[in-house]
Image (tube, rainbow over all chains, first blue to last red; front, side, top):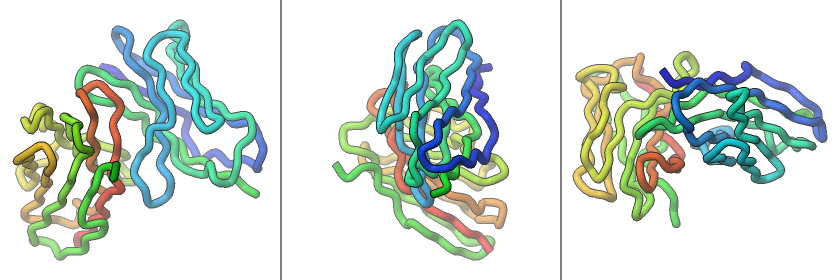
Length: 110
Length: 113
């Protein structure tokens, strides 16, 4: 069945470092791909999305490109801030549902 | 827009008691989802509704769990009787159309002692 695999955390970086969180997916057809972020004590929020191959989603300095050839949707940010500390979920939509990865916890040190 | 509203935000109850969690989706959204999040199992989809009709409840753990959506602006998730292993954060999410992105509420943290 369809699935999403993302790198295990926690990931710890210093402020202003470059961030990459890897995400690969298995799916039939061409699902839409998402990154959600969950800040402490809150629900998940949509961070960005891409609906077809080669689309780039971007928001708040984060970017991810839908790579059909490598079935990947890696999340990147050029310079992270302490406020980016959160759990990040990669996800795809399949029929009526969204299938989430297990989440990657990110810690940014000042 | 107020976003998805859930109540209560925190619930502490004793084993065997009935627990009712409530959700108000974003106005105009026609799909509603209930999730459970724990450290061990991560985020699990319990049930979802489309146009107030339950479409898939295969994620509901057992008969102690039930969910209703009497109208487009309100849904409940009930656990009766509750057990300590039901302790988790329960999220409600809504979307416009089943395949669009989902908008999550702040969650209800349930503790069953």
